[in-house]
Length: 474
Image (cartoon, rainbow, N blue to C red; front, side, top):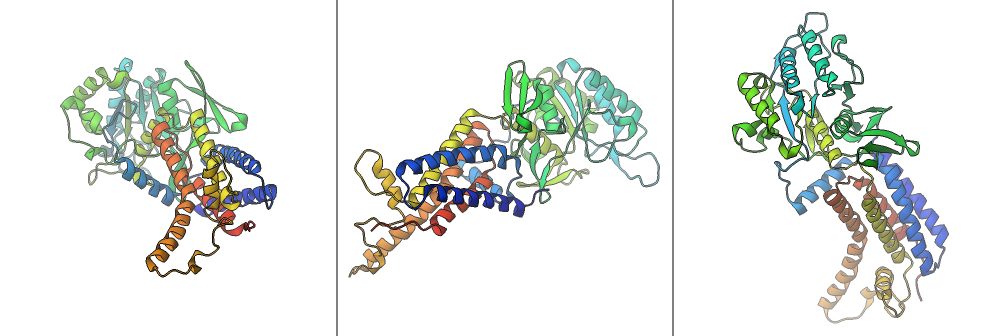
């Protein structure tokens, strides 16, 4: 399990190595072409590092939480009823409970499996209108209805329309169907918080990725020594990251308060339908209507899990995330919707944008360390301004604070301009990296390890700006 301290030390070590290599390569008085070349090489190396290493690490939760708050402040809250990219029919089992078969060490209540079996039989009767049935329920204790539930699962499995969640412990023997039906519902943790999602563990897809493979008709295989996966479907092959960090905001955290109830036929789409209602005559009418009128031309995905209306029912499936506590069903659904949006795909445009920003930020830091002599020529004045931002040029006084002036306002203005300008320039690399990831996430649905890159450039800039002392111009 990754900890914040271990990841931070790893990133700081990478920044120190980069500093030492660049400082030795550039020497005391590097030429301009060497600064540009060093920036290009460092930008490319950092892109490889981010793509192959830091994106596989869990996130820094406090930093990423701040980033999400800033994103909401700048862009405003997202519409909780916006099209999530899939037609979801949600069934809440948190209020449908029954006892267990007697036995020492066994506890209750558990999900009412008789109702669950009845729902699956009903859905099997409408299999032509179904995209998939997902059951995020663990069957760790036996019950009297296990036989009928197993038969209902097998009927759906024959048509390739069912997936069941698998936890750490095994299901009871009667409800253990093997990897063809079960998919692990585990995620990567950091300090006990949900952090990252690995698409496949030892060749077995996790539940969100198994859902994605079923609904999109995708097969995946590891390539480049497992550093990437190659997804293949009827439209071609795409390269994807084996690990990515889902942003759990595509569905609202409280689905019961997401909106006012619309027409009766819309109710299951706006909020979870209780399991005991879904098997009642009224609920069957709602489900039949939803299955016969899919949204956006997509076959509905029926997801059964604990959504836990606040203050009602029982819901133990809760986990800590960077956005607060979330239900396990919502974590799985949001990750699935991230996959549908392509958050795990390797985007050429995303790579080019990252390379460009990493190179520009590196060049900016190097120019502030080795300032350029002012020369005439197009485009050179901007580089010279960056270079002179920290170190004074030959025709400027070394210490503005020692200037004689009878106007105290002028002294305050000069001191403020000097120190405030330095502060803003120190923050510019961080601001550029933040804007890059804002663009990647909201424009390309690419989730990159923001906090790791921010920490890297903070350390990188500090090493060159404060520990490295280039010769001053005379």
